[in-house]
Structure formats: C-alpha cells, structure tokens
Image (cartoon, rainbow, N blue to C red; front, side, top):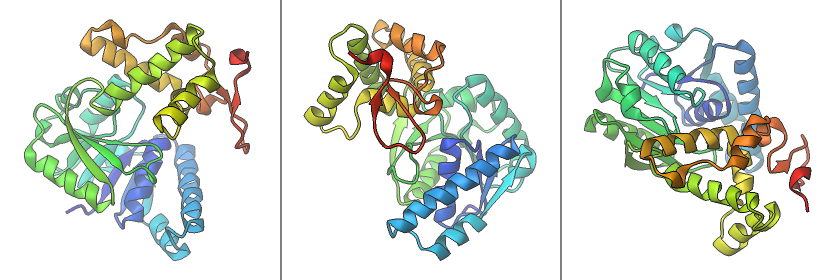
Length: 297
C-alpha cells in the first residue's frame, strides 16, 4: 500500500513517528529544513532504539535495519515526490501548517494521503488548503511515540471513508490502537486533558496546594502515572497554552480560558522540560524531580 512514508518535521514528534514506521519495516523520508535538526533526530532515534534493545524489544540487527530505512531531506518537494503518505509533524502553528499543506498538495503524488499530527488545529481547515480534502486526515500520535499505543484518528468534514479505513489499518500495522474521532476543537484527548491541566494550574495559582501536593493527589488518588503539572512540563507549557487558546476560541466558553499563571510562565520562557524549568527544575542527566524554586513553600 505504501511504498514510502514521508514525515515533515524532525523534532520530538517527527523523529518518534519516523522511528516507529522504520521499526515496522516502512521506508521513511524524514524532512526538515535544518540539516542539524535532522542529524540530531537520527541520534535521538538511535539512542531510543538502544533503550529498546536493553529492554529486549529490538535486536542490534533490527536497529541497524530500521535506521537504514530512514533517509533525510531538507527539500520538501523531493522528500514527498514519490510517497504514499505524508505525515506533517511541524510546530503547532496554523499558518505554518496551511503553508506546508499547500506545498505538499502540489508536490505529492495524486493518490497520496496527507495527514497531520496536530493536537488541536482543525483538520477541516487544513484540508481546505488543498485540492484533495477527501485525502486529508489527522494522525495524532502520543508522546513518546515509540511507547504510547494510542493514535487519535481525526476525520475532517470532507475526509473520505476510504482514507479513514486505510489509516486505521496502517495504525494497526504499527501495533498501535486507532481511535476515530470527529473534527471539533481539541478532538477528544486534549478537550479532556487540557482543562484538567489548566485546573491544576489554577489550583496552584490560587494557593489551594503546592506543586507536589497537586501532582500527588492525581497520581496516588486517581492512578495517573504522572501528575498534571509534571505532564504539562513534559508536553511544553507553550503547547498547552496554544491548545487552550484553540479550545477557548473554538467553543467560546470561559471554562477553557488559560490561567494567568500559565500565560505568565510561557511569556517568561519557562516552558517545562524543553527550557529546563517549568513547575519543576530539570537538570540534564538527573532523574530527580525537583520543584522550581518559585513554587517552593
């Protein structure tokens, strides 16, 4: 069905998606405008595969074969020219995504399916930027991609049942579980998750409890593997803010309005793991979880 998979964007999500496809014997074109980002992505994939080897998920031979299936490109038009599926995993910026889909629509073969890994932006809006809206769909992978089983499959208004069926089957070939949802702000995952994270931040902002207490209540009382504030750091506070804005604008309901504390932290550049500090302080190489000094009692 797919002679080639093209992934646009070699950041955290893009390299994770490329990793999973290559691991499951699909040839992958990994595309990014920056060569150094592509080389870093290959190093990340290699390191993550080493961890899979240590857990006896992969063998050394399987790792080498998977890495050999990944080719890198800085030119989008070349990277998508002979592909059967393009998965866009660029920044969560609507203007950037629309620009990319217009270009890919021109350069990819006529039968190619165009998918977005967006976590909140309307698939219908993205599809409308192309001349093949029936072949545009959402494939929302979860982070970290090699470990997380769920792929949220989002149907746009014009997405055909044929396209959906193909992507559902492909997701199963990756040993992942597809969940089909329709195109509403936040889909299902973030429509439920982000208000919870936002409410946790409001609880901290209003002095209901501290960072560790809030996370401990949800971990020990609700059996969540990670507290909402730590999870927000892991996702990226800028991403959380972006998704909440989409929810707030899309539904017009004040319950989705992002907290002032979240807005201030993003403005200050405290974005979580990616910046080294959010609700917790992150030191490279350390596994100890330390609350940021500004939130210590």
